[in-house]
Length: 504
Image 1 (cartoon, rainbow, N blue to C red):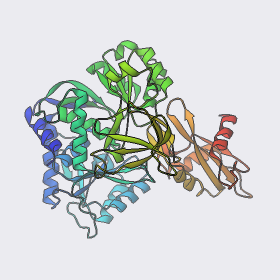
Image 2 (image 1 turned 90 degrees about the vertical axis):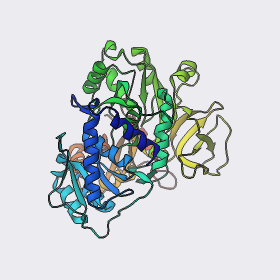
Image 3 (image 1 turned 45 degrees about the horizontal axis):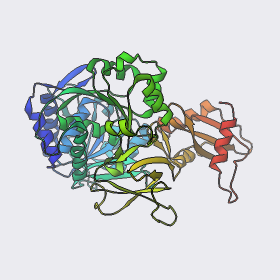
Image 4 (image 1 turned 60 degrees about the horizontal axis):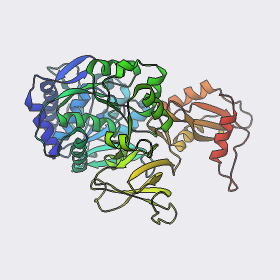
Protein backbone atom coordinates (compact mmCIF):
# COMPACT_ATOMS: atom_id res chain seq x y z
CA UNK A 1 0.00 0.00 0.00
CA UNK A 2 1.26 3.49 -0.82
CA UNK A 3 1.84 6.04 1.97
CA UNK A 4 -1.29 7.84 0.75
CA UNK A 5 -3.37 4.69 1.07
CA UNK A 6 -2.05 4.09 4.58
CA UNK A 7 -2.83 7.68 5.58
CA UNK A 8 -6.37 7.60 4.20
CA UNK A 9 -7.11 4.29 5.89
CA UNK A 10 -5.92 5.82 9.14
CA UNK A 11 -8.18 8.85 8.69
CA UNK A 12 -11.22 6.63 7.99
CA UNK A 13 -10.67 4.75 11.26
CA UNK A 14 -10.28 7.75 13.59
CA UNK A 15 -13.92 8.68 14.32
CA UNK A 16 -16.35 6.57 12.28
CA UNK A 17 -19.35 8.58 13.48
CA UNK A 18 -17.92 11.99 12.53
CA UNK A 19 -19.14 13.78 9.38
CA UNK A 20 -16.89 13.41 6.34
CA UNK A 21 -18.61 14.43 3.08
CA UNK A 22 -21.72 16.52 2.60
CA UNK A 23 -23.65 15.71 -0.57
CA UNK A 24 -27.00 17.24 -1.47
CA UNK A 25 -27.21 18.73 2.04
CA UNK A 26 -26.77 15.32 3.75
CA UNK A 27 -23.64 14.43 5.70
CA UNK A 28 -22.06 11.01 5.18
CA UNK A 29 -19.78 9.86 7.99
CA UNK A 30 -16.31 8.39 7.81
CA UNK A 31 -17.88 5.10 8.89
CA UNK A 32 -20.36 5.19 6.00
CA UNK A 33 -17.49 5.82 3.59
CA UNK A 34 -15.72 2.81 5.12
CA UNK A 35 -18.84 0.72 4.48
CA UNK A 36 -18.67 1.61 0.78
CA UNK A 37 -14.97 0.70 0.73
CA UNK A 38 -15.56 -2.62 2.50
CA UNK A 39 -18.51 -3.53 0.26
CA UNK A 40 -16.53 -2.89 -2.90
CA UNK A 41 -13.46 -4.70 -1.60
CA UNK A 42 -15.59 -7.73 -0.77
CA UNK A 43 -17.18 -7.78 -4.22
CA UNK A 44 -13.82 -7.50 -5.98
CA UNK A 45 -12.12 -10.11 -3.81
CA UNK A 46 -14.99 -12.57 -4.34
CA UNK A 47 -14.52 -12.12 -8.09
CA UNK A 48 -10.79 -12.76 -7.85
CA UNK A 49 -9.85 -9.13 -8.56
CA UNK A 50 -7.04 -8.31 -6.17
CA UNK A 51 -4.33 -5.64 -6.12
CA UNK A 52 -3.54 -4.32 -9.60
CA UNK A 53 -6.97 -5.21 -11.03
CA UNK A 54 -8.36 -2.65 -13.49
CA UNK A 55 -11.79 -1.40 -12.40
CA UNK A 56 -13.94 0.52 -14.89
CA UNK A 57 -15.29 3.50 -12.97
CA UNK A 58 -18.15 5.72 -14.14
CA UNK A 59 -16.95 8.97 -12.60
CA UNK A 60 -19.75 11.23 -11.44
CA UNK A 61 -19.34 13.78 -8.65
CA UNK A 62 -21.23 11.76 -6.05
CA UNK A 63 -20.41 10.64 -2.53
CA UNK A 64 -20.73 6.98 -3.58
CA UNK A 65 -18.18 7.51 -6.35
CA UNK A 66 -15.91 9.21 -3.81
CA UNK A 67 -16.13 5.96 -1.84
CA UNK A 68 -15.19 4.02 -4.98
CA UNK A 69 -12.14 6.23 -5.54
CA UNK A 70 -11.06 5.72 -1.92
CA UNK A 71 -11.39 1.95 -2.23
CA UNK A 72 -9.27 1.74 -5.36
CA UNK A 73 -6.49 3.89 -3.90
CA UNK A 74 -6.29 2.11 -0.54
CA UNK A 75 -6.51 -1.38 -2.11
CA UNK A 76 -3.87 -0.74 -4.81
CA UNK A 77 -6.36 -1.44 -7.61
CA UNK A 78 -6.46 0.64 -10.80
CA UNK A 79 -9.22 3.19 -11.44
CA UNK A 80 -10.04 3.20 -15.17
CA UNK A 81 -12.07 6.38 -15.50
CA UNK A 82 -15.09 6.53 -17.80
CA UNK A 83 -17.14 9.67 -18.38
CA UNK A 84 -20.89 8.96 -18.06
CA UNK A 85 -21.56 12.29 -19.77
CA UNK A 86 -20.68 10.65 -23.09
CA UNK A 87 -23.50 9.84 -25.53
CA UNK A 88 -24.68 6.24 -25.20
CA UNK A 89 -22.95 4.93 -28.31
CA UNK A 90 -19.59 6.48 -27.40
CA UNK A 91 -19.76 5.31 -23.79
CA UNK A 92 -20.64 1.78 -24.88
CA UNK A 93 -17.78 1.81 -27.35
CA UNK A 94 -15.37 3.05 -24.70
CA UNK A 95 -16.38 0.26 -22.30
CA UNK A 96 -15.79 -2.29 -25.06
CA UNK A 97 -12.40 -0.78 -25.85
CA UNK A 98 -11.29 -0.67 -22.21
CA UNK A 99 -12.47 -4.26 -21.48
CA UNK A 100 -12.29 -3.96 -17.68
CA UNK A 101 -12.88 -7.08 -15.57
CA UNK A 102 -15.32 -5.02 -13.45
CA UNK A 103 -17.48 -1.98 -14.09
CA UNK A 104 -18.85 0.21 -11.27
CA UNK A 105 -21.51 2.90 -11.54
CA UNK A 106 -24.51 4.50 -9.90
CA UNK A 107 -28.01 3.04 -10.28
CA UNK A 108 -28.83 5.70 -12.90
CA UNK A 109 -25.82 4.62 -14.97
CA UNK A 110 -26.90 0.98 -14.95
CA UNK A 111 -30.36 2.03 -16.11
CA UNK A 112 -28.83 2.98 -19.47
CA UNK A 113 -29.19 0.04 -21.90
CA UNK A 114 -25.93 0.97 -23.62
CA UNK A 115 -23.99 0.46 -20.38
CA UNK A 116 -25.60 -2.90 -19.60
CA UNK A 117 -25.16 -4.12 -23.17
CA UNK A 118 -21.49 -3.11 -23.31
CA UNK A 119 -20.74 -4.69 -19.93
CA UNK A 120 -22.53 -7.86 -20.97
CA UNK A 121 -20.67 -8.04 -24.27
CA UNK A 122 -17.23 -7.90 -22.60
CA UNK A 123 -18.29 -10.22 -19.78
CA UNK A 124 -17.24 -8.06 -16.84
CA UNK A 125 -18.49 -8.00 -13.27
CA UNK A 126 -21.19 -5.35 -12.77
CA UNK A 127 -21.25 -3.43 -9.49
CA UNK A 128 -23.99 -0.96 -8.60
CA UNK A 129 -23.60 1.87 -6.07
CA UNK A 130 -26.90 2.52 -4.26
CA UNK A 131 -28.02 5.48 -2.17
CA UNK A 132 -28.44 3.29 0.92
CA UNK A 133 -25.85 3.79 3.68
CA UNK A 134 -26.61 0.33 5.09
CA UNK A 135 -26.17 -1.53 1.79
CA UNK A 136 -24.45 0.78 -0.69
CA UNK A 137 -22.83 -1.92 -2.86
CA UNK A 138 -24.79 -4.49 -4.89
CA UNK A 139 -24.09 -6.72 -7.87
CA UNK A 140 -25.91 -6.04 -11.13
CA UNK A 141 -28.33 -8.89 -11.97
CA UNK A 142 -26.91 -10.97 -14.80
CA UNK A 143 -23.38 -9.58 -14.25
CA UNK A 144 -22.54 -11.26 -10.93
CA UNK A 145 -19.36 -12.94 -12.15
CA UNK A 146 -16.43 -12.22 -14.48
CA UNK A 147 -17.09 -14.16 -17.69
CA UNK A 148 -14.90 -12.49 -20.30
CA UNK A 149 -11.86 -14.35 -21.59
CA UNK A 150 -10.01 -11.48 -23.27
CA UNK A 151 -10.34 -8.76 -20.63
CA UNK A 152 -7.55 -6.31 -19.82
CA UNK A 153 -7.40 -7.48 -16.24
CA UNK A 154 -4.40 -5.90 -14.56
CA UNK A 155 -2.26 -2.78 -14.43
CA UNK A 156 0.14 -3.38 -11.53
CA UNK A 157 1.53 -0.23 -9.92
CA UNK A 158 -0.96 2.02 -11.74
CA UNK A 159 -3.57 3.84 -9.68
CA UNK A 160 -5.47 5.68 -12.44
CA UNK A 161 -5.93 5.29 -16.18
CA UNK A 162 -7.48 8.58 -17.28
CA UNK A 163 -8.58 9.48 -20.78
CA UNK A 164 -7.18 12.85 -21.74
CA UNK A 165 -6.47 14.85 -24.85
CA UNK A 166 -3.11 15.53 -23.22
CA UNK A 167 -0.47 18.10 -23.95
CA UNK A 168 1.76 15.82 -26.01
CA UNK A 169 -0.55 14.31 -28.61
CA UNK A 170 -4.02 13.08 -29.51
CA UNK A 171 -6.49 11.73 -26.91
CA UNK A 172 -5.12 8.71 -25.11
CA UNK A 173 -5.28 6.93 -21.79
CA UNK A 174 -2.65 8.16 -19.38
CA UNK A 175 -1.49 5.62 -16.76
CA UNK A 176 -0.56 7.31 -13.48
CA UNK A 177 1.74 5.44 -11.15
CA UNK A 178 0.43 4.89 -7.65
CA UNK A 179 3.72 6.14 -6.22
CA UNK A 180 3.53 9.37 -8.25
CA UNK A 181 -0.08 10.05 -7.28
CA UNK A 182 0.71 9.37 -3.62
CA UNK A 183 3.76 11.64 -3.68
CA UNK A 184 1.84 14.43 -5.42
CA UNK A 185 -0.98 14.42 -2.86
CA UNK A 186 1.28 14.21 0.19
CA UNK A 187 3.68 16.89 -1.05
CA UNK A 188 0.74 19.20 -1.76
CA UNK A 189 0.12 19.21 1.98
CA UNK A 190 2.78 21.91 2.28
CA UNK A 191 0.16 24.40 1.01
CA UNK A 192 -2.00 23.41 3.97
CA UNK A 193 0.78 23.48 6.57
CA UNK A 194 1.14 19.67 6.62
CA UNK A 195 4.29 17.58 6.42
CA UNK A 196 4.55 14.46 4.25
CA UNK A 197 4.91 12.21 7.28
CA UNK A 198 2.19 13.78 9.47
CA UNK A 199 0.07 11.12 11.22
CA UNK A 200 -3.66 10.82 10.40
CA UNK A 201 -5.90 13.31 12.19
CA UNK A 202 -9.21 15.09 11.67
CA UNK A 203 -9.08 18.81 11.05
CA UNK A 204 -11.58 21.63 11.28
CA UNK A 205 -13.10 23.44 8.35
CA UNK A 206 -14.92 22.33 5.22
CA UNK A 207 -13.57 22.33 1.67
CA UNK A 208 -15.96 22.80 -1.26
CA UNK A 209 -15.32 20.24 -4.02
CA UNK A 210 -16.78 21.00 -7.44
CA UNK A 211 -14.13 19.97 -9.99
CA UNK A 212 -15.29 16.87 -11.94
CA UNK A 213 -13.91 13.56 -10.71
CA UNK A 214 -13.45 12.67 -14.39
CA UNK A 215 -10.55 15.18 -14.35
CA UNK A 216 -7.32 14.72 -12.43
CA UNK A 217 -8.00 17.99 -10.59
CA UNK A 218 -11.21 16.58 -9.13
CA UNK A 219 -9.45 13.51 -7.74
CA UNK A 220 -6.59 15.62 -6.40
CA UNK A 221 -9.06 17.85 -4.58
CA UNK A 222 -10.83 14.85 -3.07
CA UNK A 223 -7.66 13.16 -1.84
CA UNK A 224 -6.18 16.40 -0.55
CA UNK A 225 -9.23 16.63 1.73
CA UNK A 226 -9.10 12.96 2.69
CA UNK A 227 -5.39 12.95 3.49
CA UNK A 228 -5.84 16.08 5.62
CA UNK A 229 -8.79 14.57 7.46
CA UNK A 230 -10.87 17.57 6.45
CA UNK A 231 -14.60 17.56 5.80
CA UNK A 232 -15.79 18.41 2.30
CA UNK A 233 -18.96 19.63 0.66
CA UNK A 234 -19.25 17.83 -2.67
CA UNK A 235 -21.18 19.44 -5.55
CA UNK A 236 -22.33 17.32 -8.47
CA UNK A 237 -21.42 20.22 -10.76
CA UNK A 238 -20.55 23.89 -10.45
CA UNK A 239 -23.41 26.36 -10.45
CA UNK A 240 -23.19 29.84 -8.99
CA UNK A 241 -26.14 29.13 -6.72
CA UNK A 242 -24.93 25.80 -5.27
CA UNK A 243 -21.32 26.95 -4.94
CA UNK A 244 -22.24 30.25 -3.26
CA UNK A 245 -24.61 28.41 -0.90
CA UNK A 246 -21.83 26.02 0.13
CA UNK A 247 -19.34 28.86 0.68
CA UNK A 248 -21.87 30.89 2.64
CA UNK A 249 -22.78 27.96 4.92
CA UNK A 250 -19.34 26.43 5.48
CA UNK A 251 -17.15 29.57 5.44
CA UNK A 252 -14.02 28.01 3.89
CA UNK A 253 -10.82 30.04 3.63
CA UNK A 254 -10.05 28.70 0.15
CA UNK A 255 -12.22 27.61 -2.74
CA UNK A 256 -11.66 27.00 -6.41
CA UNK A 257 -13.20 26.44 -9.81
CA UNK A 258 -12.28 26.88 -13.49
CA UNK A 259 -11.65 30.46 -14.67
CA UNK A 260 -15.08 30.48 -16.33
CA UNK A 261 -16.60 30.36 -12.84
CA UNK A 262 -15.03 33.73 -12.02
CA UNK A 263 -16.96 35.33 -14.87
CA UNK A 264 -20.16 33.58 -13.83
CA UNK A 265 -19.79 34.81 -10.22
CA UNK A 266 -19.12 38.35 -11.39
CA UNK A 267 -22.00 38.30 -13.86
CA UNK A 268 -24.35 37.03 -11.15
CA UNK A 269 -23.23 39.93 -8.91
CA UNK A 270 -22.82 37.62 -5.91
CA UNK A 271 -22.81 39.82 -2.77
CA UNK A 272 -19.35 40.44 -1.37
CA UNK A 273 -20.45 39.35 2.11
CA UNK A 274 -21.34 35.86 0.79
CA UNK A 275 -17.65 35.30 -0.01
CA UNK A 276 -16.26 37.07 3.05
CA UNK A 277 -14.63 33.92 4.46
CA UNK A 278 -12.45 33.35 1.39
CA UNK A 279 -8.78 34.26 1.65
CA UNK A 280 -7.91 32.85 -1.80
CA UNK A 281 -9.67 31.58 -4.91
CA UNK A 282 -7.74 28.87 -6.77
CA UNK A 283 -8.20 28.27 -10.49
CA UNK A 284 -6.91 25.61 -12.85
CA UNK A 285 -7.86 23.52 -15.93
CA UNK A 286 -7.88 26.48 -18.38
CA UNK A 287 -5.95 29.68 -19.16
CA UNK A 288 -6.83 32.64 -16.95
CA UNK A 289 -7.02 36.10 -18.48
CA UNK A 290 -5.17 38.56 -16.19
CA UNK A 291 -7.96 41.12 -16.66
CA UNK A 292 -10.52 38.65 -15.27
CA UNK A 293 -8.37 37.92 -12.22
CA UNK A 294 -7.89 41.66 -11.67
CA UNK A 295 -11.63 42.33 -11.91
CA UNK A 296 -12.42 39.60 -9.38
CA UNK A 297 -9.73 40.89 -7.00
CA UNK A 298 -11.00 44.47 -7.29
CA UNK A 299 -14.62 43.39 -6.73
CA UNK A 300 -14.11 40.99 -3.83
CA UNK A 301 -10.60 41.62 -2.52
CA UNK A 302 -9.82 37.90 -2.96
CA UNK A 303 -6.52 36.94 -4.65
CA UNK A 304 -6.95 34.58 -7.60
CA UNK A 305 -4.20 31.95 -7.48
CA UNK A 306 -3.72 29.97 -10.67
CA UNK A 307 -1.92 26.67 -11.01
CA UNK A 308 -0.75 24.66 -13.97
CA UNK A 309 -0.78 20.92 -14.42
CA UNK A 310 -2.08 18.05 -16.50
CA UNK A 311 -3.03 14.41 -16.22
CA UNK A 312 0.34 13.49 -17.72
CA UNK A 313 2.07 15.36 -14.88
CA UNK A 314 0.09 13.50 -12.17
CA UNK A 315 -1.28 16.87 -11.07
CA UNK A 316 0.12 20.35 -10.69
CA UNK A 317 3.67 21.39 -11.54
CA UNK A 318 3.43 25.17 -11.00
CA UNK A 319 1.22 27.56 -9.08
CA UNK A 320 0.81 30.65 -6.97
CA UNK A 321 1.11 30.72 -3.20
CA UNK A 322 -0.47 33.52 -1.21
CA UNK A 323 3.00 34.72 -0.20
CA UNK A 324 4.06 34.91 -3.86
CA UNK A 325 0.88 36.81 -4.70
CA UNK A 326 1.53 39.40 -2.03
CA UNK A 327 5.10 39.84 -3.22
CA UNK A 328 4.75 39.53 -6.98
CA UNK A 329 1.18 39.85 -8.25
CA UNK A 330 2.10 43.06 -10.07
CA UNK A 331 5.52 42.26 -11.52
CA UNK A 332 4.58 38.63 -12.37
CA UNK A 333 1.07 39.44 -13.60
CA UNK A 334 -0.34 36.86 -16.01
CA UNK A 335 1.94 34.07 -14.78
CA UNK A 336 0.52 30.68 -13.77
CA UNK A 337 2.86 30.84 -10.79
CA UNK A 338 6.22 29.45 -9.80
CA UNK A 339 7.42 25.91 -10.54
CA UNK A 340 6.63 23.61 -7.62
CA UNK A 341 9.48 22.44 -5.37
CA UNK A 342 11.28 19.55 -7.04
CA UNK A 343 10.06 20.47 -10.53
CA UNK A 344 12.62 21.67 -13.09
CA UNK A 345 11.60 23.53 -16.23
CA UNK A 346 13.27 24.81 -19.34
CA UNK A 347 12.21 26.42 -22.62
CA UNK A 348 13.38 24.95 -25.92
CA UNK A 349 13.19 25.86 -29.58
CA UNK A 350 10.35 23.69 -31.00
CA UNK A 351 12.29 22.95 -34.20
CA UNK A 352 15.87 22.43 -33.00
CA UNK A 353 15.42 21.52 -29.32
CA UNK A 354 17.95 24.21 -28.37
CA UNK A 355 17.56 25.32 -24.75
CA UNK A 356 16.60 29.01 -24.70
CA UNK A 357 17.51 31.70 -22.20
CA UNK A 358 15.18 32.94 -19.47
CA UNK A 359 12.53 35.25 -20.87
CA UNK A 360 12.51 33.73 -24.34
CA UNK A 361 9.43 32.06 -25.81
CA UNK A 362 9.40 28.40 -26.81
CA UNK A 363 8.11 24.96 -25.83
CA UNK A 364 8.11 24.01 -22.17
CA UNK A 365 9.97 20.91 -21.01
CA UNK A 366 9.69 19.57 -17.47
CA UNK A 367 11.59 17.17 -15.25
CA UNK A 368 10.33 15.99 -11.85
CA UNK A 369 10.27 12.88 -9.65
CA UNK A 370 6.64 12.12 -10.65
CA UNK A 371 7.34 12.36 -14.41
CA UNK A 372 8.52 9.18 -16.17
CA UNK A 373 11.79 8.08 -14.52
CA UNK A 374 12.40 11.43 -12.84
CA UNK A 375 15.47 12.05 -15.01
CA UNK A 376 14.03 12.48 -18.52
CA UNK A 377 12.84 15.84 -19.78
CA UNK A 378 9.16 15.71 -20.81
CA UNK A 379 8.15 18.04 -23.65
CA UNK A 380 4.74 19.71 -23.55
CA UNK A 381 2.86 21.36 -26.41
CA UNK A 382 2.57 24.64 -24.49
CA UNK A 383 4.43 27.70 -25.77
CA UNK A 384 5.75 29.38 -22.63
CA UNK A 385 8.13 31.86 -21.06
CA UNK A 386 10.07 31.00 -17.90
CA UNK A 387 11.93 33.69 -15.97
CA UNK A 388 14.96 33.50 -13.70
CA UNK A 389 12.71 33.23 -10.62
CA UNK A 390 10.98 30.11 -12.06
CA UNK A 391 7.70 31.95 -12.75
CA UNK A 392 5.94 30.52 -15.78
CA UNK A 393 3.77 32.19 -18.43
CA UNK A 394 1.63 30.06 -20.76
CA UNK A 395 1.32 31.87 -24.09
CA UNK A 396 -0.59 29.46 -26.31
CA UNK A 397 -0.79 25.89 -27.53
CA UNK A 398 1.76 24.75 -30.08
CA UNK A 399 -0.81 22.33 -31.43
CA UNK A 400 -4.34 23.47 -32.13
CA UNK A 401 -6.19 22.20 -29.06
CA UNK A 402 -9.05 24.46 -27.92
CA UNK A 403 -9.53 24.74 -24.14
CA UNK A 404 -13.22 25.45 -23.51
CA UNK A 405 -13.80 26.18 -19.83
CA UNK A 406 -11.23 23.56 -18.84
CA UNK A 407 -12.29 20.91 -21.40
CA UNK A 408 -9.93 20.27 -24.30
CA UNK A 409 -11.51 20.12 -27.74
CA UNK A 410 -9.44 18.65 -30.56
CA UNK A 411 -10.63 20.30 -33.80
CA UNK A 412 -10.02 17.18 -35.89
CA UNK A 413 -12.61 15.26 -33.83
CA UNK A 414 -15.24 17.92 -34.56
CA UNK A 415 -14.27 18.14 -38.23
CA UNK A 416 -14.67 14.37 -38.69
CA UNK A 417 -18.14 14.48 -37.18
CA UNK A 418 -19.22 17.50 -39.22
CA UNK A 419 -18.06 15.91 -42.44
CA UNK A 420 -20.35 12.95 -41.77
CA UNK A 421 -23.30 15.27 -42.49
CA UNK A 422 -24.60 14.50 -46.00
CA UNK A 423 -24.70 18.21 -46.98
CA UNK A 424 -21.18 19.10 -45.87
CA UNK A 425 -18.25 18.75 -48.24
CA UNK A 426 -15.47 20.10 -46.02
CA UNK A 427 -15.25 21.61 -42.53
CA UNK A 428 -12.72 23.50 -40.45
CA UNK A 429 -12.79 24.27 -36.74
CA UNK A 430 -10.88 26.92 -34.81
CA UNK A 431 -11.03 28.40 -31.33
CA UNK A 432 -12.08 31.98 -30.68
CA UNK A 433 -11.89 33.96 -27.47
CA UNK A 434 -14.86 33.88 -25.10
CA UNK A 435 -15.17 36.10 -22.01
CA UNK A 436 -16.74 33.36 -19.90
CA UNK A 437 -15.12 30.13 -21.06
CA UNK A 438 -11.76 31.41 -22.30
CA UNK A 439 -12.18 29.80 -25.73
CA UNK A 440 -14.99 28.19 -27.69
CA UNK A 441 -14.84 26.15 -30.90
CA UNK A 442 -16.46 27.59 -34.02
CA UNK A 443 -16.92 25.79 -37.33
CA UNK A 444 -16.91 26.86 -40.95
CA UNK A 445 -18.12 24.52 -43.66
CA UNK A 446 -18.44 24.16 -47.43
CA UNK A 447 -21.66 22.71 -48.81
CA UNK A 448 -21.73 19.89 -51.35
CA UNK A 449 -22.77 20.77 -54.86
CA UNK A 450 -26.55 20.73 -55.16
CA UNK A 451 -27.12 20.62 -51.39
CA UNK A 452 -28.62 23.30 -49.17
CA UNK A 453 -26.69 24.66 -46.22
CA UNK A 454 -28.02 23.09 -42.99
CA UNK A 455 -29.18 25.46 -40.27
CA UNK A 456 -27.24 26.01 -37.06
CA UNK A 457 -29.98 24.22 -35.08
CA UNK A 458 -29.81 21.24 -37.44
CA UNK A 459 -26.03 21.01 -37.16
CA UNK A 460 -26.07 21.22 -33.37
CA UNK A 461 -28.67 18.47 -33.16
CA UNK A 462 -26.64 16.36 -35.62
CA UNK A 463 -23.46 16.75 -33.54
CA UNK A 464 -25.05 16.14 -30.15
CA UNK A 465 -25.36 12.45 -30.97
CA UNK A 466 -21.71 12.24 -32.00
CA UNK A 467 -19.83 14.56 -29.65
CA UNK A 468 -19.65 15.61 -26.03
CA UNK A 469 -21.63 18.81 -25.33
CA UNK A 470 -18.47 20.87 -24.86
CA UNK A 471 -17.21 19.74 -28.29
CA UNK A 472 -20.22 21.15 -30.18
CA UNK A 473 -19.23 24.46 -31.85
CA UNK A 474 -20.74 27.65 -30.51
CA UNK A 475 -21.16 29.12 -34.01
CA UNK A 476 -21.31 27.91 -37.60
CA UNK A 477 -20.46 29.71 -40.82
CA UNK A 478 -21.12 28.57 -44.39
CA UNK A 479 -18.34 29.66 -46.79
CA UNK A 480 -17.61 29.29 -50.49
CA UNK A 481 -14.04 28.35 -49.63
CA UNK A 482 -11.69 28.66 -46.68
CA UNK A 483 -8.84 31.16 -46.47
CA UNK A 484 -5.78 29.11 -47.23
CA UNK A 485 -2.00 29.23 -46.95
CA UNK A 486 0.24 28.87 -50.03
CA UNK A 487 0.37 25.14 -49.28
CA UNK A 488 -3.46 25.08 -49.44
CA UNK A 489 -3.90 24.39 -45.76
CA UNK A 490 -6.68 26.27 -43.97
CA UNK A 491 -5.27 29.48 -42.51
CA UNK A 492 -6.45 29.49 -38.88
CA UNK A 493 -5.73 33.20 -38.23
CA UNK A 494 -7.64 34.20 -41.37
CA UNK A 495 -10.50 31.85 -40.52
CA UNK A 496 -10.73 33.37 -37.04
CA UNK A 497 -10.84 36.80 -38.68
CA UNK A 498 -13.87 35.68 -40.72
CA UNK A 499 -15.72 34.86 -37.52
CA UNK A 500 -14.67 38.17 -35.98
CA UNK A 501 -16.17 39.98 -38.98
CA UNK A 502 -19.34 37.88 -39.20
CA UNK A 503 -22.44 38.77 -37.13
CA UNK A 504 -22.83 36.60 -34.02
